[in-house]
Image 1 (cartoon, rainbow, N blue to C red):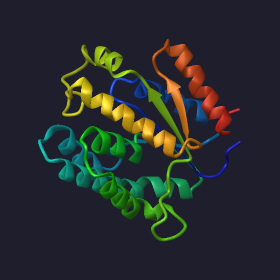
Image 2 (image 1 turned 180 degrees about the horizontal axis):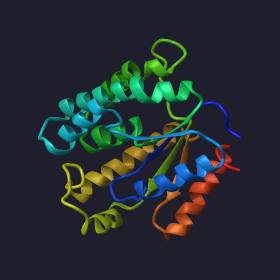
Image 3 (image 1 turned 60 degrees about the horizontal axis):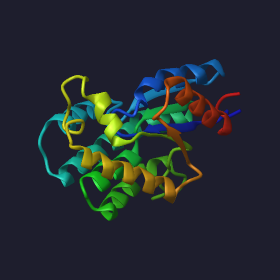
Image 4 (image 1 turned 60 degrees about the vertical axis):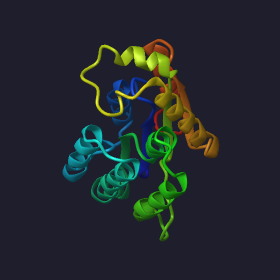
Length: 215
């Protein structure tokens, strides 16, 4: 069983269903005796939540968008993620840097090189050495065809700037997630989100058991 601090992230395009499972994941971890810090990105702190509102609603160019997201992440890492991991907790985060490479990088077409530089600057406080990027210990990628995700979002609330993007945008985002998985397959568990909820949950539990998070 995992006893030290463990960093677990959930990723996927809008409509993939990851948010509908996060509470159940937290409950399963708590049932195993883990202290869970449940958080999200962009957001997680009062400052980061303010930046989230700007990013989701205000028009801006891709560089401004990326800088605001990483500014929110910097505060989040310093104020929430790093302290919780230092206390030996499980940090369960709805999206992290993979989302930035998928949405701003693949989706918006923004420079992956610049994103990598920002990633190194912002995440170094989690590492044992300067400029060491600390990635999540496990990332659950809820993989769903964008066309199906669009159907799920059709009856949702008024969409934000990202949810309102055309299907082609989410096709690129999905490709961005696939590229992140290919670059670091040991960290990722791909969850087939295009199946009944119980089947999705079974895959989630299998990934958590394989990582030693639950029995």
